[in-house]
Length: 98
Image (cartoon, rainbow, N blue to C red):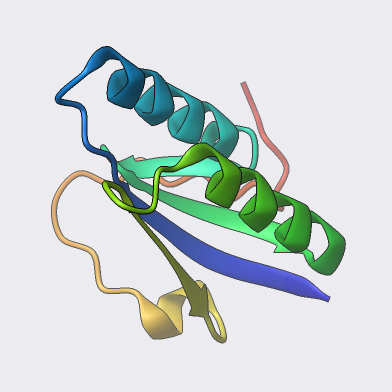
């Protein structure tokens, strides 16, 4: 089963360790989806990838200082999303022409 998810995070970057966690969370998300805002990623994963992805993210953050949210998106993208302004979305399931 495929899951379309929205991953959002807020990492405390007041110290060097926090900035390092922020980069690690962003890099983990970049490997699974595409950035749609500074700390927001749209991802498409299967069940096994989802479990490993969540586990990886939870191990990176510091729960006392950071926040991580995963929203499960249902249905077609057009049904759950209204977008205004510049749209840089790339449908990774469609053929990519360069």
